[in-house]
Structures are given as structure tokens and as C-alpha cells.
Image (cartoon, rainbow, N blue to C red):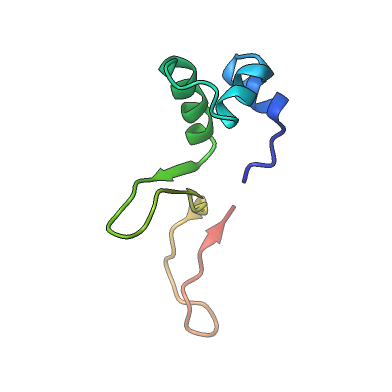
Length: 87
């Protein structure tokens, strides 16, 4: 989703690539500290982990990007729409 390599994720988290690889292959599970650091790094970049709900399993998605409004609209544009400057 973020187009990161395993090495890039490991660098951002501050762990070795083998640690990330072990979590991917489900070789680690009792060491919650590294896993939480991996989750936090992904969440800081906009990844959202969704829980299970009813018949739907857990999932992952990216947070929607909201435009940065430079100036709030004060008048209608030529075709009746609000004129909003965004970045």
C-alpha cells in the first residue's frame, strides 16, 4: 500500500529486516514491542487497521487525503459552484 520495501519498513521502525521478515512469516508472536512499533510506523503514514465486524474479517486501508484549504469560499463561481482554493 505504501510501496515500501521490507528494508525501508525495517529502517523506519528501527528493527532489523529479519525481524520484519519473521513477523511476515509468523515466526514471532510473543514479542509485542516490535509488532506495535511496526503498526505505529504504518499508522503514521496513513494505514488504518480495521477490526472484524459480523461476518467480515479484519482489513487494512489507507486514510483518505483531505485537501488543504488555502482560502474558504466567499462567493459563487461563474457556474454557481463555490470557489475553493486548495493545495
